[in-house]
Length: 230
Image 1 (cartoon, rainbow, N blue to C red):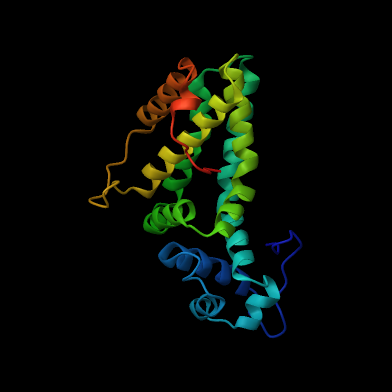
Image 2: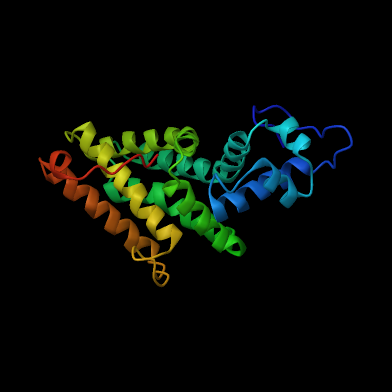
């Protein structure tokens, strides 16, 4: 385990060696339940069964705790995506849109399947992460996911030669927006949970949408802003 700066983690004086892990788990759970405002240092430490001084020792702020917790949760997904995208790009000078989209989306469902016992936590966390109005949350999300999003945009550009960077970026943002909607598993009206779509069908749907954008010369001018989906 490492600290938020990447150095080996160490317990503070008199601490249990798993204090940091418990703090990160509590941060994930409380953020998923109540957003950043509901994730005070005191609430996290109470949920983790430790002290505010321990949280300050390891992280210094609730934003730093959220950043470390998100990095820990996102690391396996980010690596799977990078590996899959590299394989797709290495396999063809011009990969298909479906192959690129699949490399970006399929690992999400693989990670979800591997952590099926945390389904509700994962859904709530995804929804909070992208709907939270706090600018600091947007910044943390951007820091953690933007390097992978850049790789995805580069691979899409190879799959769609001649298509402008604005259109590629819009396709990427909309892909993430649809993915978050599916992963959070709630209807737009707040009603019953949506059924989980077959992964291959979902990939085909997203790829078709990106291709439609690429074929519409006015797409980036006429489409509403997709927001920061990094």
